[in-house]
Image 1 (cartoon, one colour):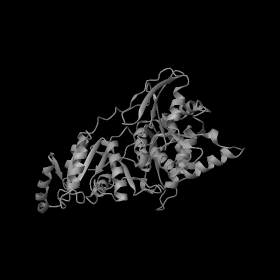
Image 2 (cartoon, helix red, strand yellow):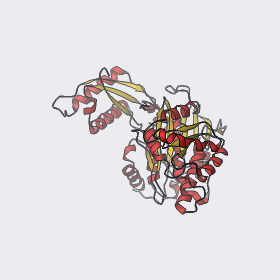
Image 3 (spheres, helix red, strand yellow):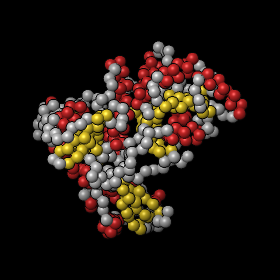
Image 4 (spheres, helix red, strand yellow):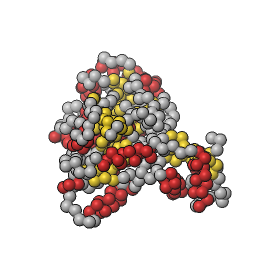
Length: 450
């Protein structure tokens, strides 16, 4: 099944987790489903193993896929205990679970224990028997009916048979997709507050809700731990998406930090603008950069909010040095505005809304095709692209195809011949020409007539 690339804003995505014992083929299944899409790899110091997340599309339905570590219910080996806890958290976060079994190993006590645990989750579970690579392995599936579940999905994650049937049924049971949004007229501005644990997300949300509050009606959000709070401020409507409600367990605090990424992915997928909170005392961390990268991949506008600024000793160069460090460590977000606040004291918190309004105006801006084409001709004439084959690139025309973020298709004679450095040049000039300096821009190249 071919995956497609989406132009424009992504909607909220349900989460599917692949679980099972070690070496049953979970990563093989993950890679087959992810296809050529780039996984988001969470690799932190002290972690027991890498974590893979990827956004996928099957039969037109988008979702986020998690590849978990091997689950050994009874093992006391430290690394397996930690992997078991990580898998449990993935199960908690998931909307649907793919339980992968190994036909060649047969039904093991560990499989039976995992099955009993999954029945307590009150979630849709699909039982897939892997490594059924031909007729000689099909008879091995019968043993798994002892689990008392139907249907079973025999498949080969490595070679493909049975894979389409499983995924067709899985996506058919995904939660209903949110309605597609237009340019945002009449809709509240959706603001996700994201970041690592203990950077002050809840404090910031509480501070915002404590000032000039006209409507504050917290209701459970569409994600399990996020809280959506609709508010009206100065006659304008907003929806705050707070991801701070992640359950804490002291013995798996590192694991909880890893799974804050899943929360961020959910919130960012529903948001117009992500307030990415940084801790002024700790500076920008690797995890902060990865969360910001999630926002960029999904086309969400970003504001970098440096919290706890009141705790920093300052001189005339403090702000400049801090900004320089942020820009150096997150070069891909050089367009995102930065604001320094204190959620505790309220310092500059109210200024966030002025930034949100400014960024949102750019995020939803539409540009007339005629104006676009006049300017792109000037941009190309000022610095023509180098031709790799001796033939000049012909730029036919450009059109805007989406907002949230502003997305453009440029029809050219040789799309594959456009170097990434020239694409960056075009994006920067488009930013300057149309006042889009603080939002992500997507630029796609197409061959005329394609």
